[in-house]
Each structure stands twice: as C-alpha cells, then as structure tokens.
Image (cartoon, rainbow, N blue to C red):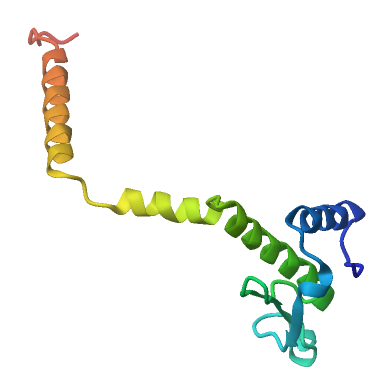
Length: 140
C-alpha cells in the first residue's frame, strides 16, 4: 500500500478496513484531474483531484477536498471503502440517516395526528387559563 501523508495510526486503520472488506489496492482504478475552486496556483497547475473507481462494484469517488494530491488519494480511499462497507453490510450510513430524519420531519402530519395535536393544545390552554390568579383590585 502506498504511503500517505497521514499518521501511521490512520494508515493502519485504512489497511485494516481494506482487509476486513477483502479489498486489495490493485483492485482500484485511479485517475487524476485538475481541481477547481480555492487553492491558488497549486490547484491550477497540479492535477490534485482524484477519481477512484472500484470496478468490481462500480463505485466511483471523486475527491478534491485538499490541496495535496496524496492527501486526496487517502481521503478518496476512505470514502470509497465506507461506501463499499455500507453497500455490503446493508447498513444505513450516517448521511443517509440524516437525510431520512429530515424527510420524516418535513412530511405532512396525518389528519388524526393534527386532531390530536390540536386537542392537546386546547387542553393545555385550558390548564393555563385556570392558573390565572384572582385579582383583588388592591395594589401595594
């Protein structure tokens, strides 16, 4: 496995994830493209954007988060492996869970749920109106 500009711990975690998923470095197809966006002259001159493809599954990742090509290579592998893990294990990724939560929150309430909500609001309003103290008209 190529050396990346990350700590040895992160490098070992990546290797362990690859072993756990049964993926070898030779299975990846890697291309480099010129990046776009902030980064100055380095981004304009050097092909720092990494396109990593796993032909066996058809997954493809494009990474241009960092100015360094080597760092983008590492990040692309990490992203691709997490997607592969999600696909293989059938678990919902954290991003997918977040999207589903937002979708549930935006969904319209059923008629029954709306009626219950209004009933609870009226009950709460009645309780609050009973709490109002009796004014005696005297002031200190």
